[in-house]
Amino acid sequence: MDYKTSPRTRKEIIIDDLTTFKEWTNSLRKIQFDNELRTYIFNLSEFSPDENQKISDQVNGFHNACGCETGSIFMNLTLVIMVAGYFISGGKITAITLHEIVWCAGITLFAALTGKGIGLFRARRKLINLSRHLHERLNINTLKQIRSY
Image (cartoon, rainbow, N blue to C red; front, side, top):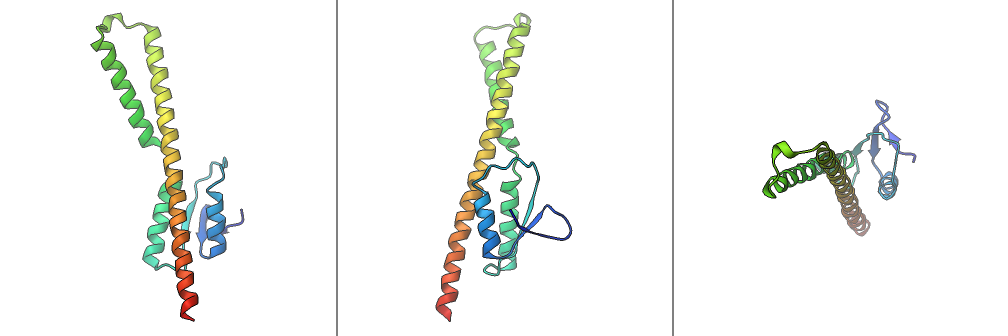
């Protein structure tokens, strides 16, 4: 993808026209494994500077999301439910075996990874929805500009 990048750093991607906006929108539907964090700077003439800053902040928040919050919620809930279930069913702390500890750790890790995946998926969906909303606004603004001539 040939984005316009700022001279300061390769990671800043400037979206300042419809071409770069469409390239960015199309890139959202592709899975990228380059593991590079990017900072998006929106500078579209159709929006005010404050709106561009707000859009940049939202996009960067969603794009750089790691899913950690959802992962930790899933992990903690799983651990609490498993420990509570063990003791409610009559288990004793002295009767815990290494096998049970390993199973508990494995299930907790699986829950954390599942939560992380769900968090990443939700962030990507929000980013795609935001891009759709922005695309609609850009189309409306373009039509207004054409009609004003």
